[in-house]
Figure (cartoon, rainbow, N blue to C red):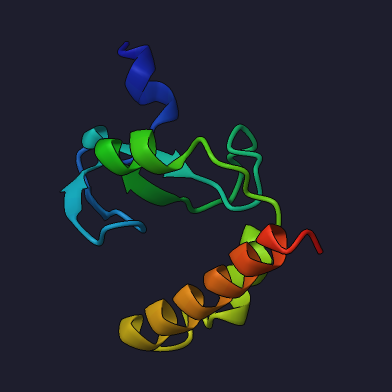
Length: 101
């Protein structure tokens, strides 16, 4: 039995990277669990990051990230609208941090 595949479901499927939008093989991606508990796998679906985006983006403070994504309309508005909204929210957050508030 291949134990690597024992806990990966559908490892040969293609998945979409939530950071860059590229489609990659599941085996070339990393799971992202927005709830932070990727080990509890029961009845769960995951989002994915391609390996380059994972290496580049996954080692930053995520405090408040989910709230920002929701406020920007993640999953409910067009990609362009989401990116514009998120950029604005991120800039405001960065300015607030720079001002020491």
